[in-house]
Image (cartoon, rainbow, N blue to C red):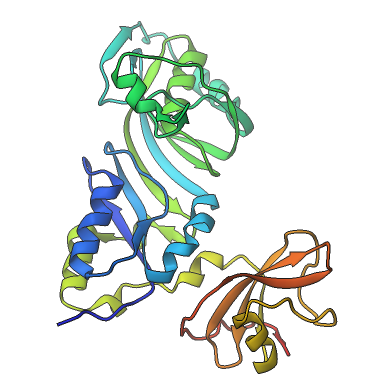
Length: 314
């Protein structure tokens, strides 16, 4: 018996030791769906929130990856590893006994805001067409360019020498392993990431996540409607409009919308989500400043209830 196709996102608490793709494969097998992906890689050492998308929701993953994230990490000072985490080989040890809470507070403050961060060698980034971790496993180290990343805040939640536990709230492209290494470097004793939990990814939080086993069982039992979030939940902070049937037809045909149509924003590359009058999520619209018109960026064929308070336009 063929399983029904569906579109949406499941908030899963990734277990320790599994790769993100292993989680995807297990839920793909349990669901019988062809299009399954995830909204941001978690290292095997990490646990916590990983958003697994199905069907048309896989087209929303860019928005989820671009969204804010929250992590809780234990950083062990005085021990440096080649991978910057506890799974790597120890390359150097130093005395961290003199480090105080005040020292950590001062060092942490330097990592808040827009900072330049060098990605670790053991990462999936590419250099000349090859993954950095592939080069690292061959004993090679190549120069990596620093990248600008946003750190909204860092809280020290525990200090039990030589391990400091921090919560970090950041944007896209941030490497917690690099922060652990850089924090140890700033303190003069070195350090590595002992453990990591992703607390938040966009609208999804650890408190509302399902274990991988729970998600598998629900999907195998055909109870996917109980755990599936609609794809547009990722866009909750984006402006939204409800359009009438004539405008809906234009959107579905990929046509630019009339110049006189009143929509929010109106600056280059502004985006908003569009719904039909009966509550179906239609598309993400983008503003083309050259023509002065809104046009469809991504068009969907979904059926979800219209969010309350969304302004209506014809």
